[in-house]
Length: 257
Image 1: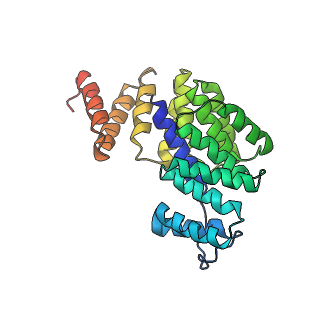
Image 2: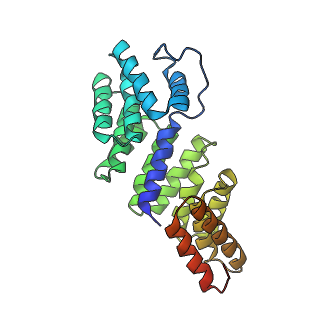
Image 3: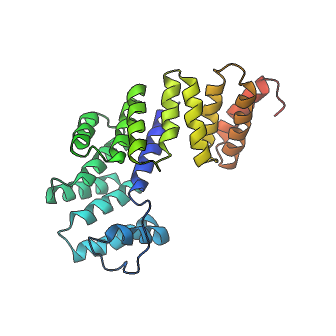
């Protein structure tokens, strides 16, 4: 399985989690630090990340001493892959408030996205010790552990993550991958099935569930069915490499696909 793809997937989820579940407000131009998350959510919805940066530029001009605005702008720069700008904003927010956890977490995820895992496990452990109830921190540590083939640690962190936030269904996907790494294929199928109930158009989930089915007795029909669905989804999303790969796999079984 491709660790880079999984890493990016998890961190995108982590970044977007900042904006999930926010309500709409009418006072989106106030730049009020107490309503910024709600205001910002509406801006992102209608104007995208570039619009979010424009909005935050105005907020920073109005409230130059608010680390919250620098942190949020850092998040936007990170999602736009403007990593130097993101790091600059995270450092600015931390310099203004050393107890502010969000920009510290942002720096860790930024380093991971750029492939720098050195020291990040220690950094995320420190944040978790300070904030043991923050589910996103466990998600990020799961990324780090998965990258180092610590599959049991990945499972433990994602289990804790989903215990803290029962609506965080994304964790089932990578936990399923980690179970596969431990050759616990029944657990892999169970978790990926839970994830597919939540997101039924994820080609990777069907493909990896098929691989886990292939390791279980009397599951050849389920395996072939998942491979067909995965192939069609990959084709729909333009991933011709994976589509042709699965097509060859199906043809090798004698299935006319």
